Image (cartoon, rainbow, N blue to C red; front, side, top):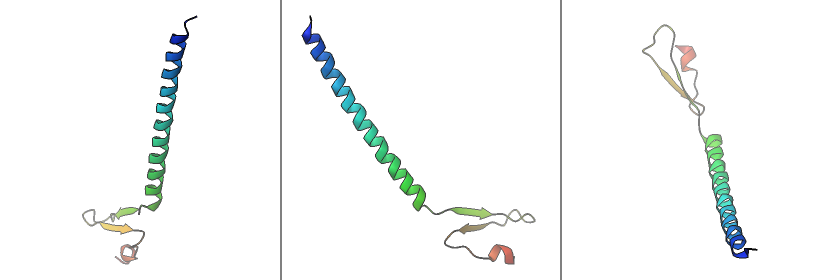
Length: 71
C-alpha cells in the first residue's frame, strides 16, 4: 500500500478543513458586526407633500416632530 500518498492526502485535507473553519469564523464575525450595525442605526425618512413635490421634510426617529402635520 502507498502510505505516503495517504499521509499527504490526509495532511492536505486537514489543512483545507482548517482553512474552511477560519473562513466560517470570519464570516460569522462579519455577520455579527453587520447585525449590530443594523440594530444600532437610525432610520431616516424624507416626507414629500402631495401638493408641493419640491418641498421635502427629513425626519429621523430622534428628531421626530409634528412639523409635517402642522404644515
